Image (cartoon, rainbow, N blue to C red; front, side):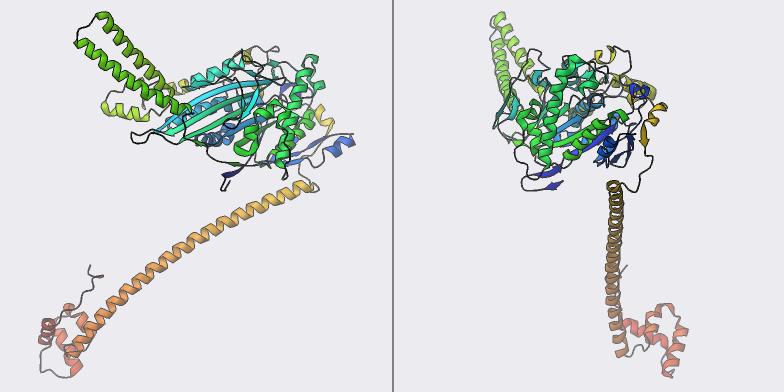
Length: 627
């Protein structure tokens, strides 16, 4: 991303999730029709004897931000797509994640998951509450809403009576759904329960694609208001307000393949809204955008705030690799390629007014504290005056009511419990059960018991109602295709398709892409080599400076000694500097011999000469070399 005056430039992140072949596709002799490597996917199987289709599928090659293979788990999807988005939302940026693809490609499994593999929604909710717990010193208010768009009608899934809601627009809110119920939430379990209750009202149905098919688009929205804790000196604080939208789109489908006359109307509305979404994405990816038809569909109208360039956007395109869904897969990949070209300019959303719930709750808490103090003082005065017992009981009841209201308001503002836990630990009053639902475990507890506890919690960690998995007309396991290994493919499918096992040189686009990928790797290697050389150069410069410093110190010491030796020679005390420097180590007799040899006379003892030199001259001691 790049920073500009208006905000930070960010591209739409587009990833592809390839699911395994399901049981129906294997039974009907279909085979995997796509190959992939790194972030590139290409068609490897084309129908035999149909020249039109072969020419239509030619050069079916696409490059995306990341490709998740069939063995990918929902944890890996969330780590690659969900976590970076949630981090941005908690810092004040709007964010939007949605799953796109044909019917039965794995969108609902990716967004909601299963009891064994929680999807993006439940993991995002859990991650947000973990984020709050790991960031002490801040206050948060969270509220959620949940809607579905069925046959171009907006229904409130948290309020079954809220049907046929209208979309409106204002300068303050932008595009919003009028009359939509928003729930202020205080725990992860509360949010998941609300979503599960909403899913029980969602429209689903049976088609030839799968036994339980989503027949409507759903939009889960979580709004985050956050601010540093208010100090006594400052009355107003900077409040960040951001929204996270997670969209589970109904799949595009062929009405003939769907095989149900009752579903033709639904299919028409689903395909119309997805076609409009594709058109909007296409217009947004162009340089000269012109008019963008957001109003042509309720789906694009509701997503207008997210798609108009002010939000972080991540798209998880789900793909069936089956040879029977080549056309649908190509449409999905074309949509992904267009979306990848979109550039958004995002910035943190700050507000400093009383319109936010966080600020209003703070004001209400301050008012309740004052009312509570007045009620307490009045009750104390009346108890001293020995008034009627009924009056006194009424005053005490008022005090308790104020306390309960105050506690209720405080619970709506979420904060980390770490500070409270540390305070209670220091006081020595922390119980083994934890605080406020925070579970604390002994470090020496049984590891097997901990694993069993985490497994039990994980099985309860999902957002779809149990009936979604249990009330299956065929009695099939709807999540088995995402967890079990692939069986051997039926050989009949190989007779109907030309399968290209390896990449051929004549595929120009693929060859160019592979060359480009190799050049990118070479460039990264050169950059790393340059970085290493730069580090070596810095080390050499540092060593050079150290050597220069040592040389200067030695030069200064040498000059001082030369000056000292010169002074000795001028007085005639010594003639050989070497003798003077080593005089403490030379015996008197040896010194006499050296002096006699040098001047040729023995009239004066050498020991007397040295003693007189020591008496008159003290050698200079350099401060740098004094040690």
